[in-house]
Every structure is written in structure tokens, then in C-alpha cells.
Image (tube, rainbow, N blue to C red):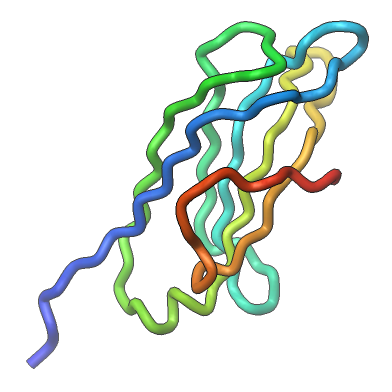
Length: 116
């Protein structure tokens, strides 16, 4: 008989602070979340645009939910949270920074963005 247990990963992307200026003004940022397998392939992907205008300290307060089928194998995955600048329809968006975190090391608190 198969287990009917259901698990869910809940990830809160709260805010960023001290984002750099882009072309002389605060960035219009959004967040991308990837869950990657051991070889770096994307398994799940979510993107959330910010509802705030240009800011060096954007507040997202966005909760991402991921359904899990197998906790032990899922804990071997890595999560990538990246912050991007929205450059408009005619320009290319680009990454401001990112955080790479093995899920088995996940905890509460602020994480420092790494340069792309």
C-alpha cells in the first residue's frame, strides 16, 4: 500500500536591501526561484515580479509552495533564488545577484546575494 502523505516546501522571499543602482536609478526588481537537481538541471521554476516601483530595498513578501513527493530525495536538491532587474520590453533583463542553497542546509534568516 502506498503512503498518502503529502509534503510541501514553503519558501518566503521577504525582501532585499541595498540593491545597486542601475543606470543611475534604483532597480525595478523581480525574483526567480529554481529548484535544481544534483547535476544542476532545473526541476521547478517560479518567477515573481515585484509590485513595488524602483527601489534599492524592495519588499516582495511572496511565498512559494512546492509539492514534495519524496522528502529524502528532495533534500538532496539545491535552491537558487535570483534577483533580476526588469529593463522593459525593449531591453534585456539582467541578474543583479543570486543565492545558491542546498535544501538540507536551509534555515531561516537573511542570505547574502552573490554576484552573477
